[in-house]
Image (tube, rainbow, N blue to C red; front, side, top):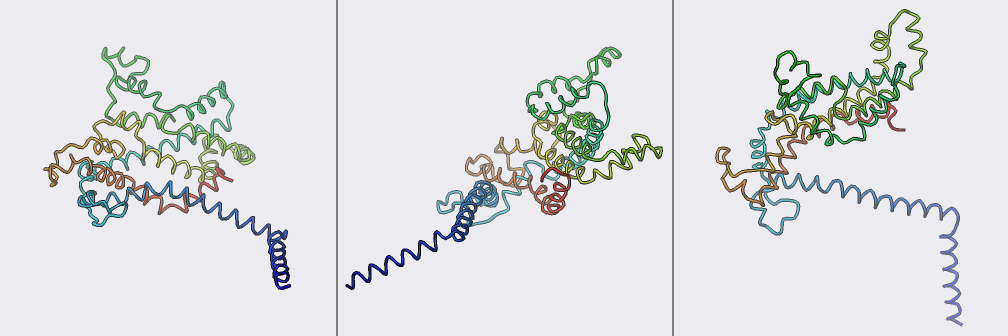
Length: 336
């Protein structure tokens, strides 16, 4: 009799649990909780994959030489030191490389942003021969990796000449533009720089989305195409211009393809990393023992320090302009 009562209570408990669990409203809540847990696992996993190398690089940059041989040190060093940062900065001549990088990046960004804006506006508003073909070529430049054109660029700028005019006049080969910044400015002025095809496409899509009535009203008031573009279209394109300029600045700052091709002797941050990958043992002039740079266990610490000081300006730039950067992308229409 007692066992029967216990069995009945147990069955009632099971039924109550089933009613709670399988109730339509509770099933929805459980589904939401389950999805939240799965989403949290994926987010934590992705964050770990992305952030772990960065965190590891930061800690390695401040790891002392004594911690290299300590098996208990996995990520966080026991003895923090600035020696790695100092050595990396001396090896790459950080102040000079940073100055050259900032000057080149800012000037190229301003030029190519304006040129891409003009070209994008032309594709959006004017009809001319071979328009579709030229725009298809612009799109083609987006999918073609720049490494494919490196040999052609090197041959062209090794003896720069346009249609052989210079050689025909002087009887000599064209000037050598390698190891100069001239190719970067030629690319910027001709809308052939880094990701310029993408920038032209962004501006073209933006201007196509603007109503033509404003331009027609300006034309009725006597404004020509140039005045209309300068006084009406450019102010409207302020948000998308900021977006393109920010992308251009980051890509130009991090460029290693063109920098390694054209700037062999001019120090900029992307090219100086090769110094860290080919470290010699001649460190006496820098105040370090000659064995430091020749130690294969110590070299990764110096490389991590070099990468950290190279990325520091971009990190600070993003931290100060984070909200402005996100708002400009949202207002430009690049995201929904």
